[in-house]
Image 1 (cartoon, rainbow, N blue to C red):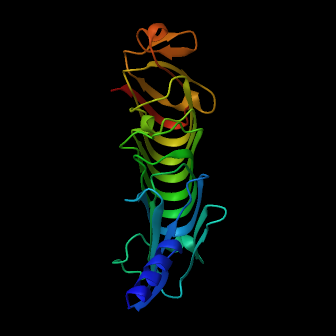
Image 2 (image 1 turned 60 degrees about the vertical axis):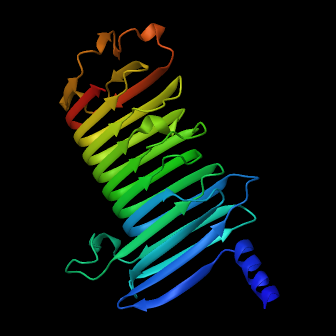
Length: 290
């Protein structure tokens, strides 16, 4: 018996665990664990048509998990981990994705939730697309080499509560319609960032452990945008292009203008420097220092 038990435990440690818990009322639930290898970056592709999506740091250095719960017959979920390529794919398809309601307790029984827990002991390339829904990403402490997020409509919050242990090559966020909140983005430790806000409200907090000589571009269309900048780095900020002449700009008075750019005090002597270009849209732009 001990030999059989040892074989079962060894099998579960080596191979990803996948099981489908059948219908719970009108819902199906899929759970899968995976074990990545440490000799190459983990590639994560997240493609969700609609629902509530949570991505967060897991408890283990090399293993992670994916769970999905969704209305029976309305969605098609698929989780695939290729151990040879160190590649995780999470897909949730739905017809007429734009008609989904946010809460499973609403009048419409159509509902979906996706939760991904990522290992924190290896570099990660994260590419995510969520067409509609509520997205929450707790990225603190993950070793993110690349970060990409596309959202067509909904509410998005990305939080880097702890610094990225490595430098991020590129950060790309594109939110078309809805609310976008990026919290302590400096802790992402990106070298280059490209942030696009469409129609709605956008809050970008660049505080945290910014990389020296890091650069960011913020492109806005319609709505209110609030940008928070740190006081412990030298800031060089330019504003222009697009519909800049139609935007109301409220710039922190401690930033002084020289030529076509704004600078923080003692910019030239700052140990760290950060360059930011903002293309405002139709609406209000607020820039403050923390």
